[in-house]
Image (cartoon, rainbow, N blue to C red; front, side, top):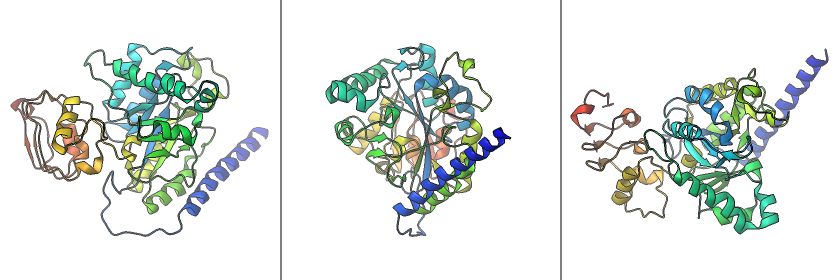
Length: 383
């Protein structure tokens, strides 16, 4: 009887919490104007972004996330540290680095979460802003620059976004790191918790870990409202673990409080399914910030040259919308990552490169002519 009552009580608080967030969203927007214009991905078509914190959780991210999200399908942002924050802040192993890069190769964003996951407000109060930036921001940039995949030597993309550990930050911090180091920093509950396209600065998120969201249907009204308002939502989580999974399976001895920071694949799949019913997109935090990124530095260099964008500037997705023809021949390009942002591209030349995977060309609805090497002729290209 007591267990049943506890369950009812928990379900009530769960509903009340998410209903309050929904009401806050409603109050944040006075008028919603329904437009008959075609909604364009990355520009005006509303969507959601999943944001996962702490690279110490890389094992469960890969075990349950890769199949759940697919290849450039449901994209997510994985916010990483330079050390394993659960196992004594040891260095990440090469195997863990390879797994992070494999997530990236499936279309996901690898973003920053502080080199040692320090609480920014507390660290700044004790050591000052300059040391926090040096120890948590610059050091993580340096660490990521040194990493590469053990087999294909792929490296991390240019970092666009930052997620504050413990959701702890101040406006002064935001001004120090944006736009000097990042375009977007993710916090927690802010205002109506809805996000505009091409955002710059701190953006809100809604945590869906198990202690805050047990019944996934509680997000339905929030998704529908975001869709009507043509805004975006970021859902934050930590581990991806089924309800029955034990922490011991991962060799961790965590407190009960630490063990709450997890979301089951069941809940994530439910949110994915509901977003699809509403014809919403799936974005990364960088994409909500309006930034295009590229795995292959040679590809990025070609784009910068064509559009006259200097190295110290972000490549904005809306800048790529006007490109209808792209000549990438003989540029030593291995990966087409980033081509998905050229949604109005009609002609493409990728001959004399080292490209072996053409699947991303299927993301380009207007692409009609592709010039490629003979060994790629048997690969399907959408015409």
